[in-house]
Length: 478
Ligand SMILES: NC(=O)C1=CN([C@@H]2O[C@H](COP(=O)(O)OP(=O)(O)OC[C@H]3O[C@@H](n4cnc5c(N)ncnc54)[C@H](O)[C@@H]3O)[C@@H](O)[C@H]2O)[C@@H](O)CC1
Ligand SMILES: [K+]
Image: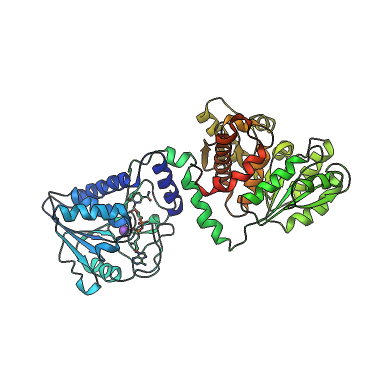
């Protein structure tokens, strides 16, 4: 199953892997033609009703593959209003080839005729909402006709994610849908065929520019609230919490706070005036600080636990107590990781270990990334928390989905880059589900590292990543 949102991401990733959308459209069109041949004998009359987006484009391609049939293409709208270049190129090819075609500038001009088979390619996964004109008139004519109805990707007017229609929708006999089944199609009373259109598996597995789309859509649904992130750490180390908190800001958080021992608060503040630093008594985290910390954390969107915390027994006890009582979202990093397997918590956790820390948590790893991918997914499922396991190939899983990130370079083994990643993951966890947050953070952090390496080679340092994180998140880091 794949949602429309994820499908758009995978499509962009495929393009980045060298399989452009037009090539996918050719495969989709071919699959539509195959379904037509399945439903009607050669010589039968086929009406292709095409919208102005890529769903229509798929059917325009199919027209070229149906030479043995009597095909009429109805384009809903004027050719100038076709909304994508690739759909327009396929329309132009039909015009140049003098295919039998009609343009329907307004609904009065629509005449479906009396075909044996109708191909509904008005709207696909690109839009949801009630059908406008001339689509609504065409849908009525399609539903009233005696023809067999084949829908392209999803019946027009139906939301592919829910199976619901906002009003009028095409009543299809069969749907040929692309790449993978869509969540909403199971709720429809029609036959569903899934066609492989040649999207590489890597487009789903490996993070790519498409994964950044999650930010455009989901982050906006959070209504301008881009997160109030609290970093809990510091003590033996002061740079780590400061880096994590600054990274949260660079990754889009509105506010980044650091809770650290009073003894080092001034030093942490010294790294950046953009941070809000709050000290607690003494020189390291201890159980006595937990009640206050829980109160403070309750008003934040995400807590990043661990940077620079150290592994003193009382600090680890405090982490245990905190996590046992906390029910929000937390990124757990560094020394705090080792307590996660023994804690029962209501919290949503994203754990960000490197291979050594993973082993300390009881997880297994392997030199082969595919084996590692499977091991990480299993371990995340056992833990009941998301994992972002750092390495040359980062592996991200929430126990169900899994993604592998290939951005980044050996220069990033320098100290502090893990803190930057943890902070960015925290900021993104305020606006995205754990799997997306961790995958996007790993991708963007690696892109930032690649940009820094262009300038500084193996001499890059963690603060170089901070500056380049926004570019890494915009996807213009190529
Ligand atoms: N990886 C992918 O995502 C692939 C997608 N493909 C096809 O592309 C489709 C998605 O294409 P698009 O994103 O271009 O979107 P659609 O083709 O689903 O819809 C866009 C068109 O609908 C019109 N429109 C918008 N709202 C409307 C309304 N309420 N009533 C009537 N018309 C309306 C717009 O003017 C636009 O022309 C998929 O369903 C599939 O068929 C395939 O070509 C191959 C790969
Ligand atoms: K359709």
